[in-house]
Image (tube, rainbow, N blue to C red; front, side, top):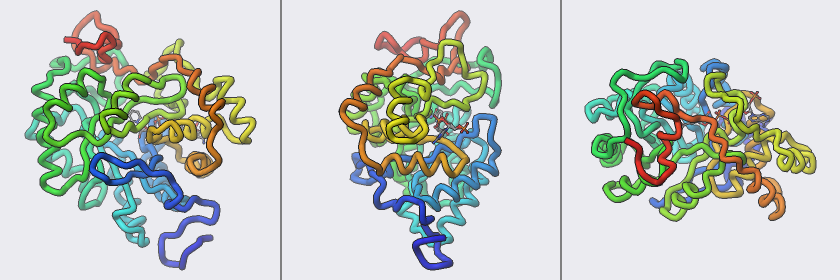
Length: 347
Ligand SMILES: NC(=O)c1ccc[n+]([C@@H]2O[C@H](COP(=O)([O-])OP(=O)(O)OC[C@H]3O[C@@H](n4cnc5c(N)ncnc54)[C@H](OP(=O)(O)O)[C@@H]3O)[C@@H](O)[C@H]2O)c1
């Protein structure tokens, strides 16, 4: 069932016209869809299921896909993107992001790593390429949070800039339209903004009602950097290793449950709706059609009231879920050292 002719890649009758989906304008003047589909399977979902969800999501109106080399599924998503593009969706309508993993920060490794993602995704260019974490500290996928790389080190700005220079080269080469960061802090971003030849377009950061990061959010907005909010629903299916007893549960917050009841939707979609209305770009994950469709619909339906926006704002518990323990570099540290809480970069 579709709204366009057979043979073309059509929007499902119950889908959302991509032209109705809000857009964010980047400092380059380019526009990105203000919601994307996450593609990290959290150890629970297979690459094939995620690749199928990419096609399903495009059929209901998604045009933005958040990928990463470390998710291990770009080669499968690439086949889905080929199907979508082969079905007649113009490349300019899609927004595809990928990320450089921590074991590829060495300047000699950056361009080959990028080309590998580009090849796997079966594209000629990417819309956005991010440095996934500001630390080069590699660890094997799925290891326990106590695991440490033997040569792990803190953020070293000169090394980060050497990696950034290679991302800038990728822009010069026409292989990527925008470059950006992920899991950064204000002090680290200040140094990058001081030294970058090409300014970051986006910063991907954890953002959900119980973890709003108001200072970092304000900082990036004022710097003209678009915040992409990961784990927008509070990542209810995140791996067990990323859970602690104190973690807040966004979809059980009374204010969010009350709004969901009023709207007749799942609390998850209230989190997504709030995020898009606040101004960040949520990238909710789901392989289930009813879920990813309702998440997309939430961005085009009647806005939350001012009172509801205020009620969700009051849910902030400063509850970081993705703490990053595996990136710590010396004994006796706690995960807070990764996040520069006192305004200085921990060494
Ligand atoms: N840059 C980074 O370092 C970083 C880190 C983490 C994540 N990310 C990106 O952000 C994306 C999203 O984060 P995330 O996957 O951790 O968490 P999330 O999007 O907050 O949560 C995903 C889970 O929420 C549930 N859900 C989604 N839509 C729903 C709906 N409408 N109704 C009910 N439940 C719904 C699903 O659980 P059920 O399957 O149980 O329904 C799904 O598995 C990732 O996929 C990845 O692309 C980036």
